[in-house]
Image (cartoon, rainbow, N blue to C red; front, side, top):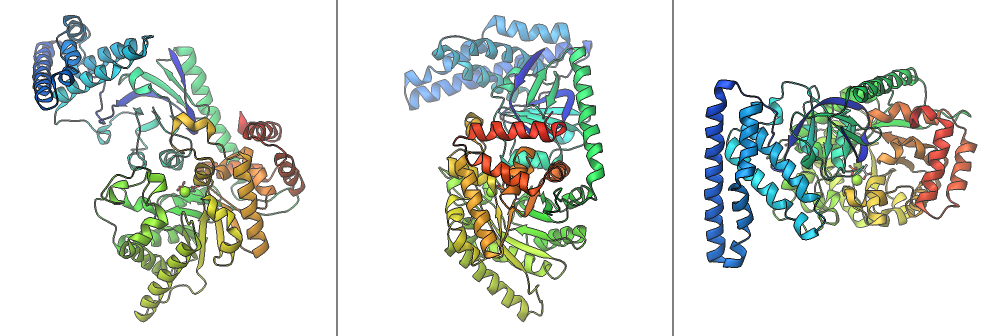
Length: 580
Ligand code: PEP
Ligand code: MG
C-alpha cells in the first residue's frame, strides 16, 4: 500500500481498479491468458522484441550517418535493454508463470525498472529513466500495434490514471464507467479539472509520477476531497474510505433541503446563486440544486469532438436547448474562449510559444470575424426564446469591447432585415479576468451592463502563475492580497455605476472565500453545480455585518498565507461540516 499526495480538484471518493493511459494514450489492462495460449503469447512477445530491436538498429544507423556517430550512440542504451537477458527473462516469467498478457507483463516489469532508475542518487543516472520509458513504449507499440484499446471500450468501473487529460478528453469520459481520475500534471483551476467538477468525477491532479508507479488493474482509491491517491490499499483502508464515500453522499443529501430556500443572509440580504455549465444538459443539474440562473455557459465546448467549426444552426440548437431547460431563468452565454488549453487545433495553424498570452478568447474571435458573427447570430436568434445575456471573455481593453459590440450591432441589423427581432433589452457584459480590465473597471462600467470576475484567469495573470502547472500550484492563490484588491476595485466600480458584479471563477465556489466575496458586495455567485448547495449553506450562516468584518480583517493582511489561514479558521468554526 502506498499513499500519494496531489492536488484535490474535484470532490468525492472512489475505489476501483486502475486503467493507466501512457502519454500516447495506450490503455494497458491487467489481462490474463489461458494456459494453452502461453506459447502463442510468448511468440508474440518475442516477435515484438525482434521488431523493436530492428527499429532501434535502424534508428541508430540513420542518426549516426545523418548527425554523427556520437548521437547515434544514445540508442545503445535502448539496444542494451532490449537485449538484456535478465529483463527479457523477467517479462517471460510473468507471462509463463502468472499467465499475464505480454502488454501487462512488459509494462509491469519496465515500470519496476523505471522506479529503480528514478531512485538513483546520481542525477545523470536518474535521468536515464527516459530511456526505460522509451523502450517500454516501443515494445508496447509493437505489441498493441493497430488494435489500441480506447476508453470507449470500458466494460467495468475503473479509475483512469494518465499523465494528463485534455478538457475534451475529460468531457468525453463515460461517467458510468470512469469513477475518478488522477494525473501526473495539472492545477486546481485548469479547464480539465473544471470539467471534472462539472461532471461530478472525483479527481486528483499534480501527482507528478503516478503513471509510472501504477499498472493497469492495480486497485486504487482516489480521494478528491483531500487530494490522496492510495495504491493497492489493504482491507481496513478500503473499509475506511468506503465509509468516507458514504459520508460524502450523506452530506450531499443533507444539503438537499436547502434547494428551494433563497440564498439569503441571516439579516435578509439576498444574492443570486447561479450555475456554471459547459453543455446545455448541465442546466438541469444546476436547477436540481437550486440555481436561479446560469452565470457562465462556456460555449467553446461546442467544439468538442469536432474537426469542423460548428454551424450557426449547431450554436442555435445548443442555446435553444439550454434556454428551454432554464425555464425562464437567465442564461449568460459566454462567447467562445478558444485557445490556450482549449481546442487549440482550431485556434491557428502554428504552436504558440505562450498560449495563455496569445491569440485566445475575444482576441481569437476578433481575428476570426466570420466565425464570431456566426455565434453572435445564433445568440441573438436564441434571445427571442428566453432571457439571454451575452458575455465576452478575456477583454483587455475598451477597444475590444467596442469592436465586439459593433459586430453585435451589425449582426442585429442583419437579423432585423431578415425579420428576426432579437431581444431589445439583451444585456451585454464582460468577464474581468485580466489585470488591465480590473484596473479600468470604472471605464468599462460605462460601456457594459454587467461584470463577471473570472478569478481563475485573474489570479493567473495577476500573479504570473500558470493555472494548470502543478509545479507552481501552491503559488496559485486567489487569496493573495493583490488579487483581492483588484476584486474589491471591480466590485466598488460596479456598485458605484449600478453595474451588476458576479464572480464566476472557482473562487466563488470555495466556502472559505464565499463570505469574503459577500462582504465585498458581490451580487452573483456563479459556481459549478457540485458546489451550489454548499455556497448557499455558507451564505445563510452569516449576516452582512459579519461578512464585512471578515473583509476588514482580511485587508489588514499582507500575505496570501495569512489570508488563507484566517479564512480557513473562520470556515472551520462557522461551517465545520463543509471543511471536514
Ligand atoms: C475564469 O477564468 O475564472 C473563468 C471562469 O473562465 P475559464 O475558467 O473558463 O477560463
Ligand atoms: Mg477565464
